[in-house]
Length: 110
Image (cartoon, rainbow, N blue to C red):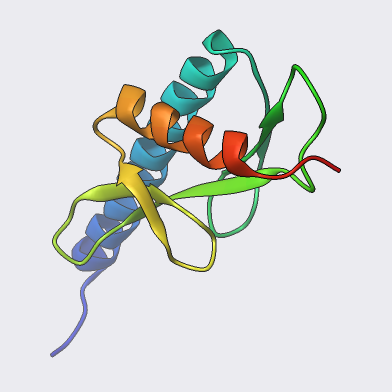
């Protein structure tokens, strides 16, 4: 099959839309976690933004929880670990923040 310039433009637009969607989910989760009192930093990486999250109060954990937002094969978006473990669907940001809080609160302090 021969590729046309129009086809290549569509692929670029789809990639840009995916980047925008991922960034919107990451920003929404960042805001939710900040409101809950967690330390949150956005790290810009070539494969997509990541959140580094830790407790603000009490002892720091052994390291920040790193959370990514990825698209599943069925088209749904998920928050999860960089190595692929899923935490929560990205379209339910409050549930994702609660799940992340549970994970962080279970970590032993330094």
